Structure formats: C-alpha cells, structure tokens
Length: 113
Length: 113
DNA sequence: AGGGATGTTCGACATTCATCGAATGTGAGT
DNA sequence: ACTCACATTCGATGAATGTCGAACATCCCT
Image (tube, rainbow over all chains, first blue to last red; front, side, top):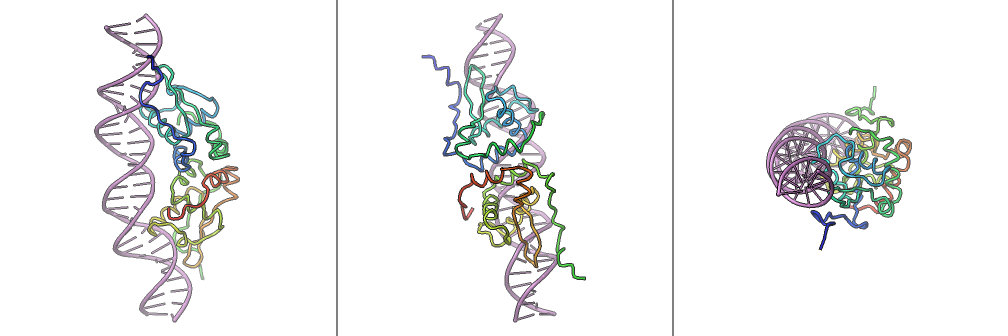
C-alpha cells in the first residue's frame, strides 16, 4: 500500500470558518512572511526552497508554519518537495477584499527581506 | 501666555507617507487594539478612559501609543483629556480599501477584550 | 490651596517571537 | 545500498511585547 502522500506530520490547516482575523494580520505583519505572500500572490504555487529570502531554512520553515496555521497558505506534498500556495478563494470568502487591499498596499516585492 | 495645548510630550504622529503597512498590520493584530479601532470606527472621537476594555490604565496607554506611532489613530489634547480618533481619510489615501476590509472582516465589537 | 480625575512614564515580569545551528527524516537518483 | 537534496524539528538565545502597580504630572472644581 503506497502511501506516498503522507510523508510527515498531517499538515494541519484550519477550516475556512476557523480562520481568525487577528492571526492573519499577525502573520502578515512580518517582512519575510509578507514577501512570501507577495510572491505567492503572483505565482500561484511554489516550493519552499525557491523563495528569495535571506533567512536560514529552519527560519523559513517556521514562517511557513505561521502562515499555514493562520490559514493564509496551503501546503501539499510532492515527492520530497513541499509546495505552498495562497488560499485566495477561501480568504476572499472569509474576509472579502482583505487580501486584495493588503497586497495592493504592499506594493512591489522587496526582495531580500 | 496660556499654552494649554502643549501639555506633555509633543505627541508625535507619523506623516501619511511614513505610515508603514507592516506596522499597521501589527498594530491591528492585538485584540485590545482591534477593539479600540472598532469603537473608533463607529464613533469618530473618544476619550481614553471611556473604552470598555479590561486592562489597566497604563496598559491602555501603551496600546494607544502603538496605534498612534503606527499612524492608525490621532490624538489631541483637550483639558486633561486626550481625545483619540481614527485617521480614516489618511489611511484610506495611503492604503485604499485596507481599513474598510479589515473592519468589515472584524465583524461586531467583542466587548471586554 | 487642596483634592479628585485623567492619563502618562517607569521599572518589573512573564510570554511570545524571530533567528540560528545541529540533528533528523524522507524521497530521488546513481 | 549509499548519497545527496529538501525540508522539518529541537534546543538555545536575544529581542520585542503585553501586562501590571506605583509614582508622577496636569487640569478642573470646590
């Protein structure tokens, strides 16, 4: 029985109704995480290691966990990669216009953050 | 020479162009501060002590400073009261739609926070 | 002048957080 | 099987944060 889609932890994502506004705002209030979200806003899906941010891999993993548990991003396994995507439609359904306004306010991506 | 309008510190407020998105998001990611902003969203101007939040006066003062230095609220002196108001137009000019989306997402005021 | 009301500043304290290095686990390819 | 690449977890550490009580400053009113 090949269960190749359950590699490590079950990767808990909050349900749409469980997404808390303050958690989302806190998740977005960090420079590194904002950069991640901006990139995902433009590129739909991306592997963890391919983000142009200047932090250690363990730090990056921490930020992805914060974003995931806040309900901002979604992660799925593929081989030994972990692909990350924005939960755009779900966030739009829960907090209409919020992500659009935030991303519009963020302006161009500040690479290196 | 009655200088009744300069009571204590000069109450520094950031200029509109200096308002930082991440600072604003961080300021809004606290329950107490979110409650304050929600109340001001509905009531234009209000004295510090009249907010129904369950924190010590010194803590409240701290939260007002965070909101003020992030550019979210504006404070002016009147007698020995300090009146606080949202910087609605300025925030709308700097980050269009942001405050509207956040306040819409926040829903009804959770008194007691 | 004295007292009460309003709000701030100053430590202090516990919690949270961003960050890193080292160790670990998983999958792909040789 | 061995190794390398990818990503996580763990432990530690220094900084920031939310909270409070006590002390202080300013203004109004009696």
